[in-house]
Image 1: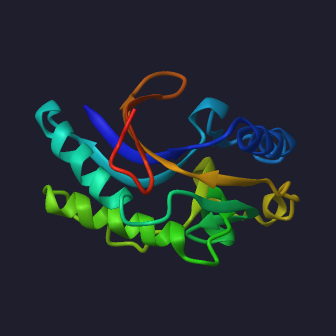
Image 2 (image 1 turned 180 degrees about the vertical axis):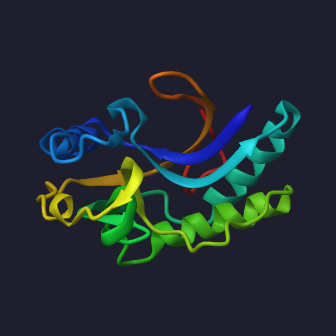
Length: 186
């Protein structure tokens, strides 16, 4: 099964991101916009994983989530692009992480997963929500000028997702939810 660790977004955050996408579809007809139901914050992509490894992954996530705060406040910030706005392949909306709690959580997740055999991502983690992917790199300065509605929300649960590839988009199913600051999951 294909797995990744992420954070599910509240409906009002998905609404704000969907509004941003709707306002920009005509300006970027070549973009593959992330479906509203698939919008999430990725902490770590694990790839193809044998089902027997799910329990050790779940335990590693419990360990990663337990020591930090049980709620991490954040908010949508401005839009950006990877690798840069002039040659964009990914358009994203950044999250407020001035206190570094989201980055610390991502670091704990990476360390925990490393203990159960997953290599750390080489690129530094950044608090962002992918909203579109471009088939051909292009300048997206026109898109980035669009105002992102500021929406505050709390991160309080990590989710281990299963990603099932499909058309027109993948389907993400929660495998486990781990509350931050505790050792319990639902």
